[in-house]
Picture 1: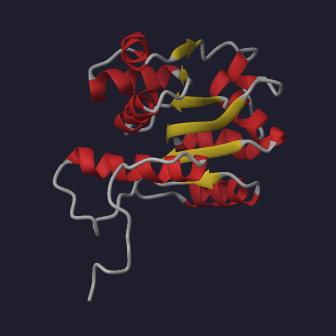
Picture 2: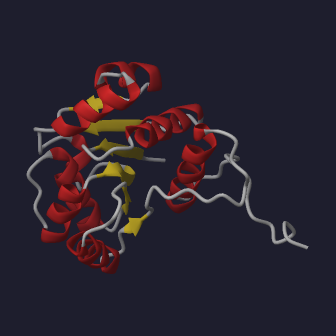
Length: 190
């Protein structure tokens, strides 16, 4: 089994990246963390954490976002998936244009060329037409787009329940078995 690269960009929603790292750690899945400069600001503001504190609490390996030669961007590395969570509109635009100017975008572009799982979790509202066009372009390249839009059929009782809904979808699309949240069975409405 390979590692999962989790990238946190400057979009609001750093809690999603934090929780994904926590769950992957609980599942004993190795992770690499890359945080953009804007992501550092959001992580501190929304979660009161530095990237170093997050790495320590989740047993992740921290990579420098300015090092485009990092392991996360290697085509020969054993990487199961690259998850950009949350993914800013700027990062979406760069990926759609093939721009790999930092380790987050380079890791994602390498995931595309290697046909690895690339999952982006945009957290914008509303989406500008350019965001939608760029997401459509990425989707046509097999990027999985999971907007941070939780469902309510499982009757969430807390913010944690809402966050876990998205994390469960991410894990599903990577292909990892988990028991986070309730799955729809078809028996709920009778």
